[in-house]
Length: 292
Image (spheres, helix red, strand yellow):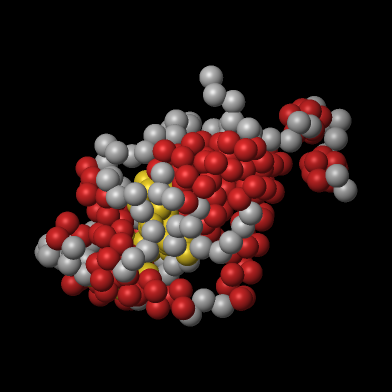
């Protein structure tokens, strides 16, 4: 078994910056392990563009990401895709070579595709994803596309990490209302009606305009129609970013990371048992957990 030393990590970073997807994959596995801080201390920190893509299952998120990768590669950018997988307790570190929609990018050394589990021994999305993003930024990727399934708490966390958050929907009666009920419209900076050549696309756009005050674009991802316009809208949104918005996103990230650490606190079970047995109260237990 190969022992990965500090020198080895530095060699892996050099190789990954030169286009080695294998080296990048090994580093990502390390930041998903107990050696995360060791790797992050070596690579440092630099800003990177992060675009979140979410939406209900079947909306065409992977196809949308595939055409966005193509659009940004044509602009000369190195692109990484992090596919957030809530169903797997641990991704195992495999590149998603079996994703047919991503197949055209598999042999491109400047495109990395990675699965990241939202749950597991590290305590959730708030821990796994920011660490992976920080590493990929240090490996000189210009843009990170973050995909999630579009259900649950992960969307709130993704909207705090990514800017913009792109919500992909399909045309159809009631889709806009269902998206609103699911909370997806609340996190959307850009709305995309995919499969816009289908019946009902125009009505879905009208419904969305009544529900949300963000840009709404049509896309036929399977044919690449509208991909350049979507990339332009993403770029325009990022140029309009402000310090206040970045600070708000950072606040949510910090709180999510803190919550993940508190869930894994060694005293949590003991404090909960004391509250349940009536030996303590929740306020006192919370203060002890925070060390105040």
